[in-house]
Length: 386
Image (cartoon, rainbow, N blue to C red; front, side):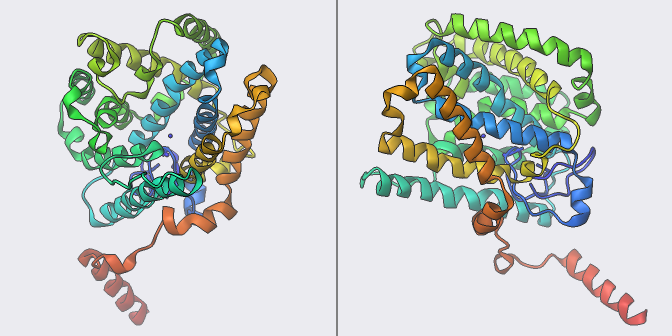
């Protein structure tokens, strides 16, 4: 739940799962890279982002249906255990070179903060119109539905220079997540529970190198991932009546879920281990070569934010209430429809239409960087001399 992926070391492309310079969230990513940047893209990361955003859309389409099927509930739990962690790990990986340089701060504002503000206002207004709920308020402090990820990515990116200074960043991030899980007083402002409980996945991405992704792309790992996923589905089926699926959302403290306080830290560590195992298995099956959907990986931010309107429209209008949709064939139909819809929303025509909201230029809002002006003057002098 969102940039262009470069081949190995730095992120100069624009594009929930994304390079740190790009304007859109890490994993979901925005499109529009230049010709030279396209040549630098690693198909593996674009493929991973596209497949993950498809799982996000399918998971959201399952929410109104899963209560009638224990199997679907188990599949839902397994998908929710790794799809956002996978996005966030990639976001952290392509945020490694983020610093407080003016051009990168500008991209952070235009590619993350501005879309957050626009969609945080758009979703409640959409509910007012479609659901006929005039009482729905717009609040920039309470992320609504999908916008929490933009808020979290903004905070994570800003803290990147700090994590580069810390000697053991991952244990520290896990400690922060564990403390958040026993702190119900944090409240809902800026969805800080999710920001803090998902933080270790972002920090892990910051700590990773390209060769770490190579390790999970070996044939032996791909074969081993099959029984791992099968076991996860069995465990998910067993846990349906025994576990609150809200643990997968990372948005509540243990006390909010009716659990003892010590369950929070235990679940943070347990969920982190399970999520990383399933994320590694997911990466093992992501194609390395260019596929028909590879280019769509550059538009996952669009698919991420826009598919929410379709899911919410179906919820408000009662589309999921039809009895046949709650049977196996209906659930398959909804899954295929969700995958097709989010695929369409990642395509170039849709990105052109909504680029004003996802990748605004906003040159009028920023001062010109002194270093950039000096470089331009130097180029002009060199051209004049030449």
